[in-house]
Length: 55
Image (tube, rainbow, N blue to C red; front, side, top):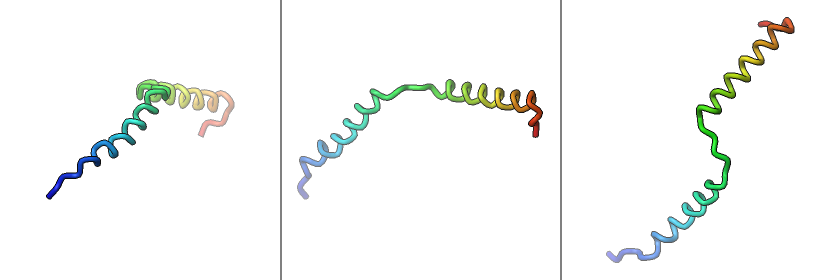
């Protein structure tokens, strides 16, 4: 059987464009997301307790 010569470049071209677009995105570490989420959760619980809306 004959090998297809042009399929490798066509399939990788889309991936290269995708990763180039990803380089311009804002990079946030997972630890930062967890810490901010925990702080927001604690703040909501604190404000609920202060205002008398404790579950």
